[in-house]
Length: 265
Image (tube, rainbow, N blue to C red; front, side):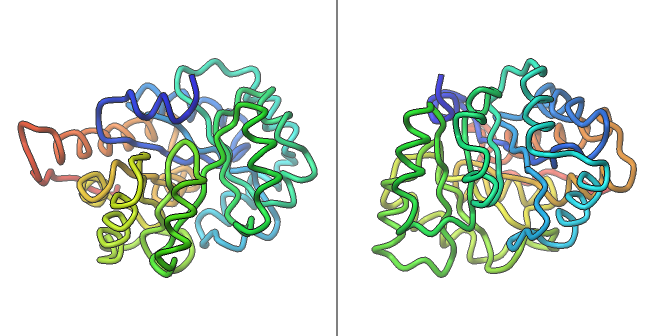
């Protein structure tokens, strides 16, 4: 089953937690915890020394993983040995993809790929390679994306459309930017692919808001901050379960637009 098929058949607001690959020796236990807490897919970041779109928290998570001596190969080897029911989406930068190749990702069981620094006008070759390998290449749109380019991105994206909720890098924010709902509406007007909002979604309330505006949320920095502060896999699972509950209660037919309580600790 492809990533897109899996997400389309989920039948609920989508939740995609992010975990930095190799952040701890037992990092794949965090993936299992996310799955058991209700993740619909899990985004795994391959640590990179020059992560231009990552804010302080994800940079610190990457630095910790790199300090442990992890490599893309070691992370993919770990993934190969981890049995999961939900799809894995790798997020990394073009340099690493071009060096290691999509076939290696597919061999490790990866279903989706996000390459934020890949220019759309130069992505055709990678799109073809990804399609041949059975990996959905997920493309990104931002509040600044003009209408004609947004439509093209939505047509070419696979798996889902990643809507960057706010201009800037990843990181926790106090509120979900007003631009998030506007962008989600623009995307949903031109595609029926799932639309997931990311960048800055930090609380269960914000996840629920993202679920109402689009089809779900990607949550990264808020979870990695917990791991950097010492959260165990079980701790992270509880945080993901709070996001799951908020998404479900926030958009379920029985409780439309209901807000739920939550906390960031």
